[in-house]
Image 1 (cartoon, one colour):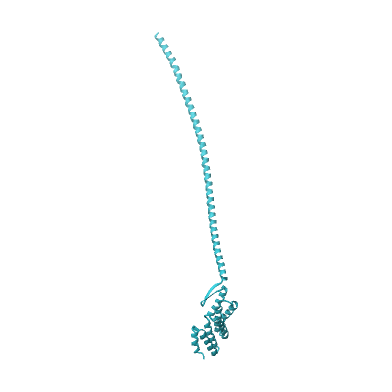
Image 2 (cartoon, rainbow, N blue to C red; image 1 turned 60 degrees about the horizontal axis):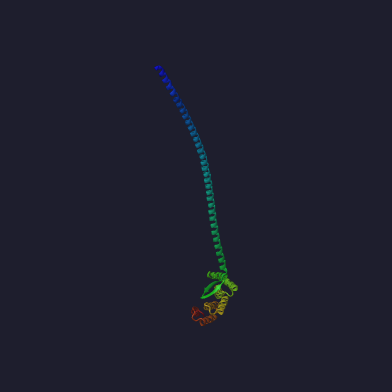
Length: 259
């Protein structure tokens, strides 16, 4: 009886344990499936993340490349601008030089024009206290004649002064031209011609500062011609007309030598 109850109890216990064990087996399978599902989802998520990351990297790489291209284009533009600026600076410097050259040439041209104009403009001259206006060529010709006289080229000076008087008969140099013509003729021993020139000066300009000297020169010419009588008369004329002149004093001294 007891044996029967023991067997019955064991059977009952096995019957109770069997469903529990089977339930434990089912729980493990579900857990594994859940883990597998989780792993699959995680892998899918990782794959999607990697894809998005790869896509983002591709976009970023393209943006970086685009930025590099933009920077390269900008650098090329800057280099082009530097080149253009260098050309402009060169052109500006060349233009500045051209303007400077033009201004210098204009200044030289203006100076040349002024010089040429001055050659035709009358000039004021003061000689022996007398001021008068002369033409540039008139002054040049007179100065050239006087330079010949200073070099003791009496014949050349006489010719030059004669030509001057013919070309400028009303010149302010007229009185002086006559006086120095007489001196040039005296130097050439053309005494008669010299007397004519000196006498013309005294007759045309008795108030001239050179008139007393012209009378004394006439007396000297007459003395050279051995005409002492005429020389004494001329000195007397000098003493009466210009008694206070230096030429008059020299004339007195000259009288002593006249015989």
